[in-house]
Length: 265
Ligand code: SF4
Image 1 (cartoon, protein in one colour):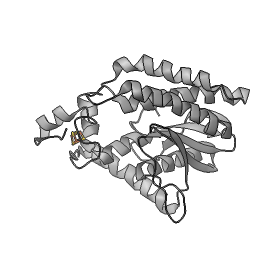
Image 2 (cartoon, helix red, strand yellow):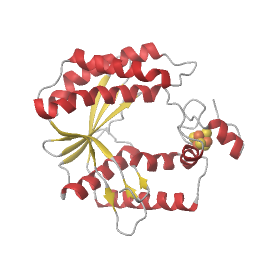
Image 3 (cartoon, rainbow, N blue to C red):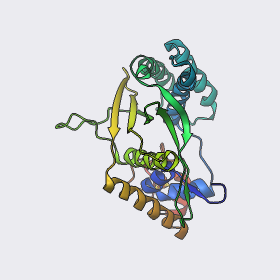
Image 4 (cartoon, helix red, strand yellow):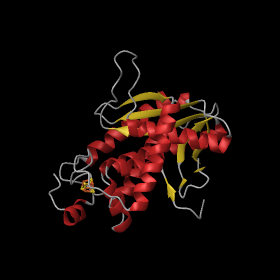
């Protein structure tokens, strides 16, 4: 994998949201993460502490230990975080502690991991990029689970009662499934998402995604399309993107300077 450049689901999704962000990340460099990323990272690190030891112990750590892991991660990383005027970090930190408690009670007992942060690379013959990606958790019954945090509940399909997995999470899981097949020689038993919703009273939502032939075709085409865009230097500022504002995009000054216009506050 070392010789070829690589693509990951997050780079592909970032390119699709706003390709100019990919350009600025490469030319200007990364920007300090915002509060949402601090929250997501602290949640991931706390969950990893439990899942990594559970591979061998087969037992979950207690709620207090995981809450401590969340707080340790938050406090360690907050100095590198860019907070904005309306952010309420102390409030969100308390929500995160409650949310980890709920994850420990409701989600952890349902998972027996066999690996955490397993690399699921894909190499396509003749294609100049490799796919490099890591799945949060793979269970003993070969289910891939990705942990997500979200500011509001994921919408439910009224007819089926199932959660409507957003397109970028579908793409990510589809790519994990393809990577699992490439590494293990069989499809994973299922692809799932555990959402931790960071409302005042946090809640957990669980979703499943089963890609069909068309979904896999779409994933391949997006991989190829993004690779072509990168090779040809196609970078277009997407001022319609949900993440296009001064709060969520750290490169807004460079973007205004290069392309003109005004990025909204
Ligand atoms: S400011 Fe908007 S258009 Fe410019 S890079 Fe950021 S997200 Fe893209």
